[in-house]
Length: 145
Image (cartoon, rainbow, N blue to C red; front, side, top):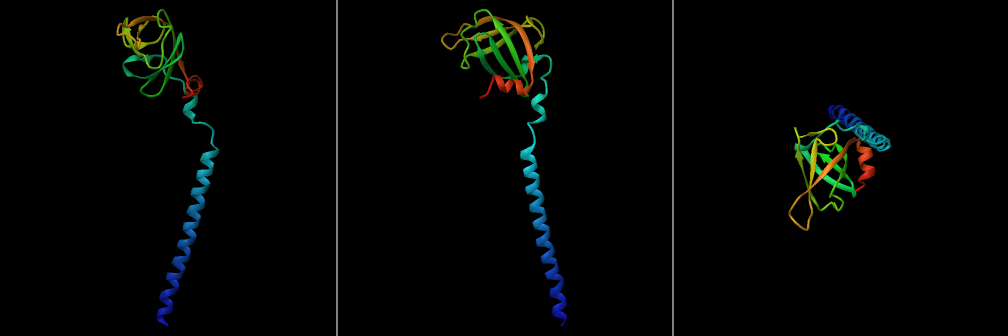
């Protein structure tokens, strides 16, 4: 009979282990379902800092012939209203900045946009008429890609 006493705790342990595994699976499934029901990321409504740090720019996206969307390395987005000879900008163009002070672009005329068309090497200098920090949600409306 000592062998029966040895097996009973093992059976109880196996059954309780199976119940624990089933409960863990249910908890994980519930967490995944709750995650899918959540609204958009809280970062979607987070406004970018007031000034674009041009030393840390990332991607540029042309919206139209006078609007450029500039992302920094932290994926904060800024809408630049540009004027001058930058009317033929494309996403294949190269961009840079020429500063009048620091590399912080907070308002119009803090820097000049340098636009390098793909057909020749001489840069065009374009005025920055306005700098608007955007939320990530606003940026994704302008840049769905």
